[in-house]
Every structure is written in structure tokens, then in C-alpha cells.
Image (cartoon, rainbow, N blue to C red; front, side, top):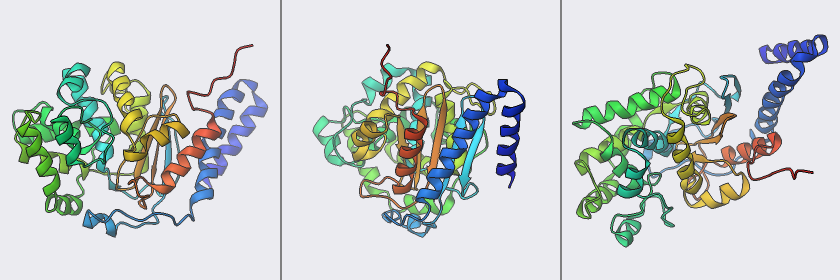
Length: 337
């Protein structure tokens, strides 16, 4: 009802004062495309919850929320916005941004790598083949290495740095999903093995067990669709949170971060995503997906059922349609006459 009243007021303002027309049309289009995508995909039953992390199998598969936050701080949304899921691999983006901000893009390129591995996100083979090099901070080995590089004299300091970073991007205090953390921490032997293998190749920069535990914690941070959209919008706005107006990271850090999102944001389907949508994005097996339209907005969708690659089925379809309807694929250019 509130949304309908807001739309009526905007239409009246357009009729009364033409100066409102451009802004109102823009606002109407954002909400309209979200509404259209939500209604189109709300009953879709494809995919299934991740179950290799036992607690994720218990998450309500019907959660479906969409949010757009613009670089000016305006919020448009539809669906389940109060339901939270664990952020999972989307957290890698913001830890990466903090690392770039602290130590520079060159450190990430030299000590972790920025090329896509070409293998699964949790591949041990990728580490072995490259001897710990070129492992990418948006897949598990590179993300654990990134955590090990984050500033902090001990594990508590590193964790505080990471959580504070996520809070600043979201513009609110986020909390840990303890059941998910406990579930993951009790079954993260593969990630521990990856961390020890990296240590053997001199590519782990802090205690491997503690680094893996901090990484597990960051993946268990709880978020809803609006909070994720604010985080994405902070990247879109050059590192300034559009809601709180706090400078979180520099524009240069955002540029380097989004570059890596473009090459490795959706696991094995990263190339397909960029080919179809053109926007840097990152998914998480908790069901979240963010995408960034630089200078314009951040978008987030939460829907837990995933495809075989580990990406939310509804979220991909919804963002694809929204980006297409808004005409924001940066690779589609109208020829100059």
C-alpha cells in the first residue's frame, strides 16, 4: 500500500511540475523492474539448497528478496527483506577490498593472484598445479590466503578488522549466524588441508588453522537482501556507503575489486554470467547474489536454491531480467551518429 501511494504521488508530481519528470521516471523504472522480476520468478521451483554445509539444507527455500540501492542512497525492494541467510562466499569480496585498501593491489597480485583458476572454487588440484600461485581471492584457497594477510596481530584482531569492514560496507552491525558457523567449523577439513598446502608453498601468511577459522566465521555472517544491496552499492559509489556517507575504501580499491568479481564471481559460471549480464557480481552458497552497476547502483537477491555450479537460480534470473530492462550492460553501446 505504501509503495502504491508513493507511485501515485510521483505521478502527480510529474503532472504538476515537469522538473520532477526525469527523476520520477527513473524511480518508477527501478521499482517497476523489481516488481516485474519478483512476480515472474517468485513461484520458480528450480535448484536446491546447499547441503554439504549441513545447516544450509535447513534454510527456508522459499525466501526470495530483491533490493536495489542507488549511489544516491535510494532503496527499492520487493519480497523477503527481513529474512537473513549466511553471506558465505560473498564475504570474500569485502575482505578482498579491505586487503587492497590496506596493502595495495600489487600485494594481492603478487601474494595471491588474480587470474581465474579454471577449476572448482574449493579445488586442491588448482593449488598443487600452480604451487600456490594464481589462486584468486574469490575462490577458497585465495580467500583463506587473503584472510591470512589482513592486518591484525592475532586472530581476534584480524576477525575484528574483517567484521568491522563488513559492517561499514553494510552500514549496520552484522551478526554471526552461530548454527552455520558451528556446522562449517566442524566440517571444514578440506579448507584446512588447502591452508596447510598453501603454507607448504609459502603462500600462507598467518597460522593456517586460525586463518581457516576466521575465513569460516566471515562466511557465516548473517545478511538480508537490503544489507547486501547496500554493500554492493558502496562499491558502485566508489567506496562511500550511500546510506551512511562513510568512506569505507577508495575508488581505486573498488575498481580492482570489481575487476576480480568480473572474472571469478560466480564460480564455474563466471564467464557465462559476464557474457550474459556484463556486471561484476558475486554469489554465495547461502543463496545470496550481488551485482554492481558502477556509478549507478548495487543490487542483491536472496533465494537459497542453487544450480549445479552453486549459484542461486532465482537470483541469477531476476538480476538478468532487471539489468536487461534497465539497459545497464556496459558492453551494449548505442552507436554515435
